[in-house]
Length: 575
Image 1 (cartoon, rainbow, N blue to C red):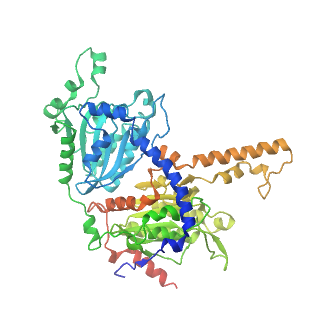
Image 2 (cartoon, rainbow, N blue to C red):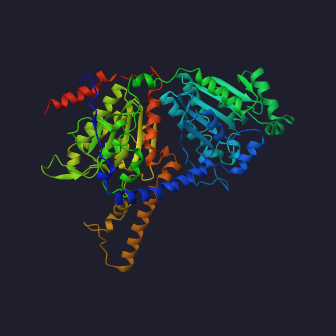
Image 3 (cartoon, helix red, strand yellow):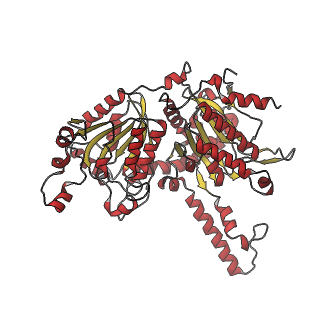
């Protein structure tokens, strides 16, 4: 088959859900998202306007000012790791966004990963989780081969908490290994040094291909205060490692510039020298076209109650260009939907959990709940994932999953082996994969559908996401199983013992429900970012285009020779 058999999917919103239900669901989600957005604003403010004014009083810009000037006019900033360390305190201090901004943005028409120390938070110090957040951003740049732009203004480790960020496998020093790996693999790295650049902060820019310094900047292994104490020498940090030293003597930097604005202009000029994006080449004559049905409608189509169903095709119809989609193997494993559409004019694979009830092939006329993984569905998405990898098509996993099927029949069918095949496939794929936790992300199903432990390039959550081994009520029952009968009712008739069991079960359920808050996952880097449902299409446009930006580092087949066509023909031949 020489073409991709795209078909229209989706239905006008009014025919999917009535106005009242739509408004009710949208208002519930709005409340959840408003809480997230309020905390996002707090993280973006750093330590507040007073500290921002201190920075500006020195003739410098804040980290976010710098990114705003660096990016292309009209380009969005897609920040990852916004909520790292959210709500955490270190002594009496906080570290909003772990004191560093990491974001995808477009510079001179090319998607880049920008890593900028927040100089309003302890002069850009590295807190617990800061090194891991920087490394995560470096890994995203490495996997997509995006230029990595470092806006360095860093006073080194926040020393009172050094034990939590210095010595481990992902401690601060691992940043420099990531610098080295990016360099070894030919990923462009450009560094601008704007101010304090002490110890690890001093090492961070050095391996970059181009290093710029402002007249206020210095890079030192040890600052003036430490040298004064160790060697009794009275000397300033600028004297030790300013641009006069590193541009004209040591060669550790390439160019000195007068101020922040000039440096940012120079970084843009360097990015412009790089090869342009290949996305237009891979689009061919297909332009980027918005979905037929507005992506913002997702905010009212997904019920906030994870036990309520929705039509997964309606989600895809609000993510794919023109709401056109080729569903692959639709008659196999109907609890799963997989197929191909365009996002921003570029081919993208999708896997999503169907919701509600589906026919049970093991029991003619019977039904079973979707949102779980059964044998045929696992085999289908394993084959689809392998084919996308062979064809070089980026793959988006849209999770709303309760887990694997369980029980004697599931074990007899070998679900462990089928699940292992899927895990192996997703562990060894080289095509970019992106994971979105729409609502439930439970148990081994979360793993199998390319959850964060299986290394998607980016994992996104929504305000509805619930990440856990099992739901709170289920875990409470499992915890108190010996106290319950076959109908999960408390066995004892003793009033005091009964009250204690009831209280214990409520406590377990409440604790698990609290732990499933997407902010908990984002705080501890178990997900990369929480995004509004209505913004999901825009995020996918950024990530998918980033996947196609560079030519030659992975095999991207033209659609005439896709393995996906072979897969479809072979299955059709069995009918």
